[in-house]
Every structure is written in structure tokens, then in C-alpha cells.
Image 1: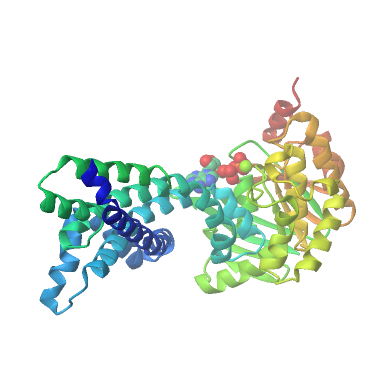
Image 2: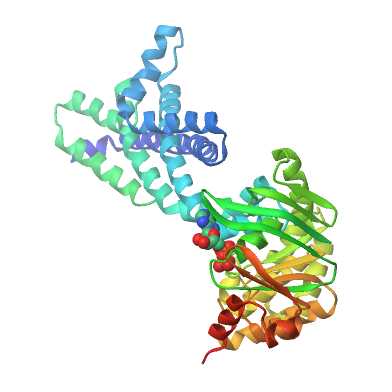
Length: 199
Length: 248
Ligand SMILES: Nc1ncnc2c1ncn2[C@@H]1O[C@H](COP(=O)(O)OP(=O)(O)O)[C@@H](O)[C@H]1O
Ligand SMILES: [Mg+2]
């Protein structure tokens, strides 16, 4: 226990990176996800298929594989990313797929009469989408987005494999230094739990 | 003002509208009646392009939509028609995330790019006209059905339409709220608005409309003067229908 208290600043720094990665990835994921959702609902056949393939591939492959592809795989093509940058990119792309599903569901749960009412007053499809549908869809999307956010918070632990010193890797480093496991892993477990429940 | 030629509408192999032809002059109030599923809503929705017709030609205020026209030409005409045509739905379809007055100012601001201040002045006057001055800043969910439908009428009027389409505007209302909505519609009719009203309110149709269209199975079976129609419908189909709706 003393060991944990002694190393709290180090663990807190890890927690800071965990949160940072979560928030940054969530931010870009929201943008990617909104675009993908609109592409799937309103795009032409080609755009729709591209968006659908994106969602299907991301949801059908382990995030760990996605992370190593971005960090290690791209090196083969001369693209060397820093670990943190690779983490942002891989996780933003990952979360975008889940966000797009949340948005798509939300947009589709706005009753059809809303679009019709807007079109009947002379709005274009785009205006109806922006002024009438999306503001309502955002409300429907908040609960699933909250779940996605918590999921992302936990998933960031995966980027410890590419040497980003977030919370998980902070604990691993301490374990390697002191040769005790439980206190550190238990502590970060509690820290993840606290963060998940306080957003 | 409205000219419809050879209008057909199919859903897959199901023919819902079968060769409608009619002309409606400006300021006429037309009541469309007929059994459920006869194509009344579809007919109305073809006029402002919420449904795409399968065949035929519709001209509204000189804007022509033709089933054979390219998508682009069709879109352009339909936008022009919609800006001059108000529509009122059975389920009101007010925007729940906007206040009553925002519901009314939305289209003038977004579609006509009207100055906010002017849009609010117009909206206030319209809400006064439908008797809802005290509700400007509440949300639709706080209103009764009758009040919501009156807001929906004000929302449509805010675009200063030349034509108003009503699709069973009182069918979703509790009986005691029907009157307040019909009253607003009657005053519009008296001011000379061109109106097409799908309704089951036979008394309203008889007393307010200038013309009755009786539809069955996608066809206009009778096109008649209300007095004559309600006194003595010409077809069996219409006689049966009137008997059914006036029983009890
Ligand atoms: N979107 C649709 N897809 C398939 N069939 C439809 C659709 N909308 C309406 N119909 C059918 O078209 C017919 C006419 O419907 P509608 O115009 O709503 O009739 P009414 O308003 O007179 O009750 C009905 O048989 C209905 O089932
Ligand atoms: Mg109907």
C-alpha cells in the first residue's frame, strides 16, 4: 500500500494520458462517426458502401490489431508515427465506427414526419437534416455515446503495447520495478472504475 | 391554379392512384372524402412532392412537375411548389426541440432568409390569429392536440402560401378539440385561401367546402357540389360510404 501511495504521482500521470487519449480520440471519432453516419444514410451507392465497409471492418477486427497495424504495420511503407500519434489515429478510427452506428440509429429514430414537415415548408434535404433532424438525433444519441466513451476509456489500455505510458503501462512499469503485482493492478483497476463512473 | 393530368401512383405493383384528372381554380375549397386506403393522402402528397408520382403531370401556380422530367428539373419545380404550399398533417409533426414561435419562424428564416425580427413579428401575428398568443415560448409537448394543430397551421401560413393542403387535420384529436381547429380552417376558407382538405368531418365538408371529391380505390368516383352530393350521391359507392359514416 505504501508503495502505491509513494508512486501515486506516476500513476496519476498515467491516468492523465488515459484521459487525454480518450478525449482526443473521442473528439475525432465524433467527427468521423457523424460523417460516416450521414454517408450511410444519405450518400450515393458508392459512398454508402465505403462507409458500410469501414464500419464492418473496424467492428469485425480486434482493436489491438488495428493499433499494431497503424504503429508497426505502416512502418513498412515508410510511415513512422510516434506512439501517441499512432494511438490517436488508431483509436479515432476505431471509435468513429461505433459512433457512426450510434448516430445512424439516432437519426433513424427521429420520426419520418419531422423530415416531411420540414420539406413541406420548402426546406432542402440538407436544411431539414441540419436544422430539424440532427438536433433531435443528438438527444437520442447521448446514451449510446456515453457507453462508447466508457468503452474507449477502457480500450486505451491496449495502447500500452506500443509504449504509450498511459495508466496500464504505468502500472506495468511499477510492477517491473518493485516485483509486486496486486497493489498496482488493483489501484489502476480502481482508477479506471472511478473515471468510467464520473464522466 | 392546380392542374392535374393523368396522375398515376404505384407502390410496386399496387396501383394506388389511377389516372386522376382535375383542375382546381384559385380560392376553391375542396374536401376530399372516401374510405380509408382509397389514396386520399397519396393524392395530397403527390401535389407537394412528398410522394413521387409514377406517371402524369401536375401544375401548381405555373410550376410544373412531370413524372418524366429529370430529377433536377423535378426538384427545382417541387421546391418552388413547396414554398407556396402549406401542409398540415394528421399527427401535427411540430418540431419538439423548438418552441412554438420557433416552429413558426423556422421556415421563413431558413428558406426565405427572412430577417429574424421580421419573422418573429409575422409569427406573433399568426399565433394571435390562431388564438395562441400566450403560448409563444412553450414547447409543443406542453400543448393539447388542438393547440398543436393550430400551431402547425400557423407554421404553414408563415410561408404565405397560396395553397394549403390538410391531411385529416382533426382525426388525431379528442372530439372536444376538433372545433377549435375547424374554426381556424373555416376562417382561412372565408378569406379566400385555396384549400384541399382530406377529412372525415362531413358537416365541415358540407358547410365549408365548395366542392367534394369522393375517392375510392384510387379513383375520383364523384366530383360534385357539396349540397348535391350530401343530398343525393350519384353512385352506390358514395351512398354506402355516407351511410357508414353517418350511422349511429
Ligand atoms: N409507402 C407506402 N408503401 C406501400 N403502400 C403504401 C404506402 N403508402 C400508402 N400505401 C398504400 O396506398 C393505398 C392508399 O393509401 P393512402 O393514400 O394513405 O390512403 P388514404 O389516405 O385514403 O387512407 C393504401 O392501400 C396503402 O396501403
Ligand atoms: Mg390518409
